[in-house]
Amino acid sequence: MGALLAVRVALVFFFVSFVTLFPSPVYSQELLIANAERRIDLTSHIIRVYLTLKVENTGTSPASEFLLAFPPTQVNHLALVKAVEAVGKRKKKTYVPLSVNPVELDDAPNGTRFFSVSLINPLKQGETVTVEALLVLTHSLEPFPAEISQSESQYVYYHDSAIILSPYQIKEQTTYIKTPSTRIESHTRVEPTKLSGKEIKYGPYADRLPYSFSPIIVHFENNHHFAVIEKLVREVEVSHWGNLQITEHYELVHAGARHKGIFSRLEYQSRASISGVSSFKDLLVRLPPRVHSVYYRDEIGNISSSHLRTDSQKSELEIEPRYPLFGGWKATFVIGYGLPLQDFLFESSDGRRYLNFSFGCPVAGTVVNKLILKVVLPEGSKDPSAMVPFPVDQYIERKYSYLDVVGRTVVVLEKENVVPEHTSYFQVYYKFNPISMLAEPLMLALAFFLFFMACVAYLHIDFSIRKG
Image 1 (tube, helix red, strand yellow):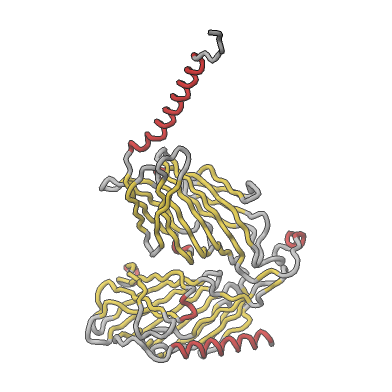
Image 2 (image 1 turned 90 degrees about the vertical axis):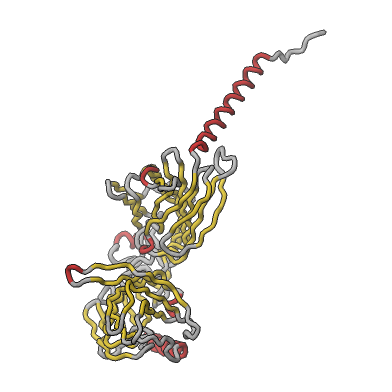
């Protein structure tokens, strides 16, 4: 009864706050959505929303773009927005990536975020186009109850709308919500609503006006490990002597329902299928092929509970922290490994060198609240520049290592709210004179020569005291 009352109070508050924020439509372009299908995947702690929109131009002038709208409750949790346009029919259908950029409207309701999707060709009067979008949300599942014991399952709330928020009229729409199990405690009904196993179907709904909204709450079991990396610092050190050294510092936390009571390792091991079902004791790290010199350690020292599998296509490192992680528990550790330089360093047509490496977190199924990626270039590198396929913060640092004279240039890339979909290649371009590679060997040779001359001088100088 208490849980049901909490759901009703939250639902009323959610509805009132949303209605006050969306008093009237703000976009007047004559477009409508003839058909919309939304599929919301709640099987993990990272929410993925798949939108299929059939956009029609009912105006007289061509339309080269249209808007996606997001409620204020999702703005801070939105990690990624992607869109593609379906070209062709059936077996010959292809998908062309579209440019998606955030836009601001002067008369937009408070807290609303809009993204503009640019079409391949302007949409003429009476024409239609099918666009598919991927939306990735993080930190959008609220554990309820907020604290659970070792033997309890984890239940969460998910807030959304049965009606797709859009600045355009939607002729027909349907929403599907997929949960990880059939244990759905409660869900808001907006007729027609159908519950079948792990899936809830809302709709179809016809002729919904712009900015129509119908808040819903789903309360369900989700024992997926809520692995969140609060901070990840990846340092990629480039050596022109043939090696690429990567060092990664992790601050990991279980972001699910907090653990209450005491922890019994005996119960955890003897009743593995029941005890601590929402906890996790291992992680999978996906590494490039031909990896070598892999290590895994924390503040105490080396952690031996890891397994490395390699082949010609990929490398996988299974790691186990020193203890299983329950809700609210944290762990810090370091992973390091080496890679052949020739697999990642190339020369462009204009003579510059460039590093082609992967951005993102190599640990599977995790959210990174803050990712700092540092590319340490060889001493003597000049005019560095980075090309990343999405917005990041960039700046330059200086690092000094053994035998460095002027220091090494460090290109720093920072991004918040990083999800697995951000794993893609980026490039760092720089100029480098091969003569600079001789600086350290010559310095060592000069040092040994001076030391040798000092030894010779010491052996030939007579320091004894004689009478005059």
